[in-house]
Length: 349
Image (tube, rainbow, N blue to C red; front, side):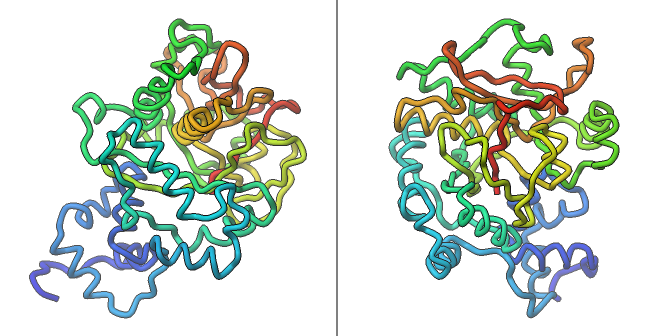
């Protein structure tokens, strides 16, 4: 290896092997909020290049845009998408983002990657009918100084959701502390801390969900900030309301039946749902297209945890949620064990 002071560790090599491409590795690291052990992979271009040269013969496990499109076509999956094709869905969202990012905005297809490990779950979800939409979460290449301090939930709320108010969109409790958490909406958005099902200790979560939420929040630290020029494709459903007889597919591609509709039971079955930021994007796209509200007759869980110990609430943490009613689109949070027939899970695979 040329110009490398020390051999990369086996951990770093395995990470590069699993991610398949440097671009995918960088994206995954950034989305995770930055990992110290891989910091050099991000900051040192010579190390990145030599790392790949060092580990010859690895098999890429990430599909780029062209490979993803071919996978959809080979498996005859585009017929399950509401747009009829993957590229048509991307083009529709490109037009959507131009309303907020400017007429020159383009979605960079070279930044679209899907880890091969996600494919079985995506295929199962499409064929089962619980996925029908390829949603693109994308940020502009340049952010303002204020935007760089925002969480993703904050960024998409202020940049997009508030932007459609001129078209008649209503936001419930945009000011005030009407939520049981005593949080202003602005406070709720900046506290949305997105978690994956595998981060939880499921048995502890079942016994004392509030304690487990606080443990995770303290372990992860402050919610990560929005990243400029990020592109991610998320497979979900764009149905206005998720039906009560919905088939539920988890991250492993297994059809599962949670014990109830609580967040706890979803986590126990390794079910991944939309984050608050992703839900805001979907709501905005639905309203821009058809002037309809997301979840007008149901509540939906979100993947984010919310810390509000400083508000002296009991319990002192909660799980983000969303719904719509005659007062507009509502962003809030609830107890993780709260469950009834009006709660739904909107997947994000």
